[in-house]
Length: 172
Image (cartoon, rainbow, N blue to C red; front, top):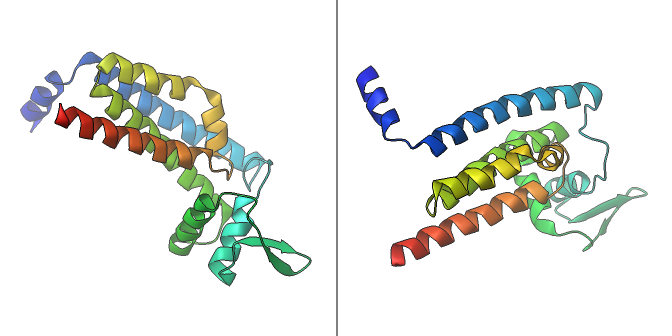
């Protein structure tokens, strides 16, 4: 078993090794930040919160809207995809805001991994550089700890890029 592990590690290039070291350190730092934020702000960072109530209304009342004086008013002021996604996550794991924030943090890690893997098909250096930009930019960490759609859209965009590169590189 140990010989197989050593053999497989020798086949991994240096940029991939550096990326996984960065990713592991980033996950540890992300967990630390998540813990610190939750001790100060138990409901996430105190920024605009429109997706959580609309997701709860979708889940409980089957209406995409906001509660106004005890009545749910349908709205089209926000893109509904993230609210639908949150409603599905809440149905599976519970209707707590913390569940959505954990989901955002997981999507951020998956986005970084997807971006690295997609650009690694072009060049390992490009994959490491693109993933490092996201890892070292603190705005992504902030956005992962509030219930906003930015991280989900980053994830879906990175998936589209990954499958596009995969499709077109097989075609060439």
